[in-house]
Length: 150
Ligand SMILES: [Cu+2]
View 1 (cartoon, rainbow, N blue to C red):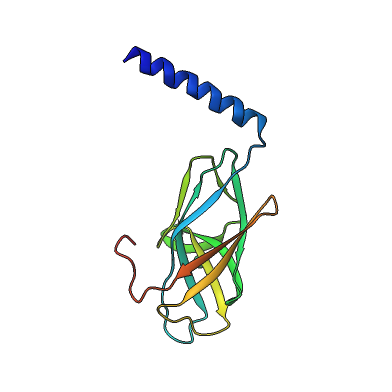
View 2: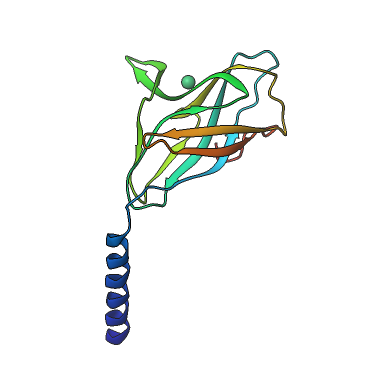
């Protein structure tokens, strides 16, 4: 038992030393990405996903873009004096190792003025723009029904 603990402590030191010599960087992971289906002609749709930072520095997401929409942004839903409203998020910071969930009733992608009707089964390209200039390309599914965990 003690021997194995000592061994893992040494391994830990080795990993830290290597990390110290490399440039610290955040790494954005995007999973379970989906857009809620809306009636034909809808001018606003919402997108949801789980964002994670698997890197060793914070990530700051400034905004999102999609060729399928004329305008896209990050929003959060807040309740102000009993009234539910949405407001834009200008900087979404994700700490190293942290996860941020975009979900109905909370933070979401606000996708406005679609260039075509978004239909079930489609995959929509969405780009996340980070403050260090990184652009992370992702694909959002358009399920016919909301996923169970939404
Ligand atoms: Cu919104």
